[in-house]
Length: 410
Ligand code: AMP
Image (cartoon, rainbow, N blue to C red):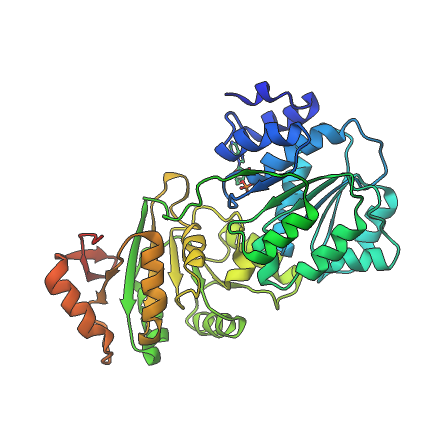
């Protein structure tokens, strides 16, 4: 089915055409008719599935018939980067309309945001804290909101934003349409749904548990003391064009990036302690190829539309299996092949087992040939697995070989 059949407003359709969208994605196919009918919607689709257009196109179509100069559509996002990304998408979709959008997030001055609000807007894309600041300063009134989108609700919960979200919803009129997107629905989100939504319909676009088929996964067991050295060795040997290195905390991300800079890598860092300008510069520089390496934490990178990454390196094993899938989602997009390399220390055993269960796949344990390893008990397990369960072959990396199992276990 083509976009033309939905009955979206013609100016919005012009925007869709200009974006080059031809066929709707599965979430768009299912969500657009529900939202056009005026019903509330719970969507369990992740970023990358086309969910922004899924909620934006029908809501913007309806907004065209509404009065101007009143903030009537509000999209809440957990991070500044996501807010900026969604704002860009909204600007693209509204290019052939007279609708105006303002983006409100922290870490930057109030001036421009207040100017935009004073000039008059119909659409707001915002992070919860800054939005409430504007409301408290009386720069903004949510009394005319008719379309409310709570995006990445589970991440808002993780980040402690739910009380702010509730305060915002309380300021919106009851008479409104609400769409909520969340990869998972924990109890607190369920409570929010009960309280904030009216007979919502649910659209589940099969939670992509399994990472793209085109991604090759490899695990590198290593002693904690040798992680840095192994990372440097991997970067020296792996033939990458662009790589994202994921760390568990901001401090570790800063540390790893400092080590890499010392070794003359062009590195950018992305975590929530950086200023908005620093983060934007990091992202743009990485997209443009000015930086070949991006060191990031999960929260800062979640949902970002960074395509064409040839390698993802998990310097730290993620704490949650879903984060492994999110991280790996940066590579192997759109049928391009990609590699996902994970450094694993003894304490990561349980987390790794949970990840393998989650993705339904055992990941090959590999030793980097010629690397001067110190002993870790993980090697005994790796050797046992190799002998019994997998067939080894030498795989060429630029400048060296590694020995990797080739057969997947179930
Ligand atoms: P999202 O999940 O909303 O972040 O969208 C992910 C990417 O898919 C964005 O770059 C969108 O521009 C793109 N996209 C969304 N819908 C479509 C579509 N129907 N056809 C082609 N690309 C799309």
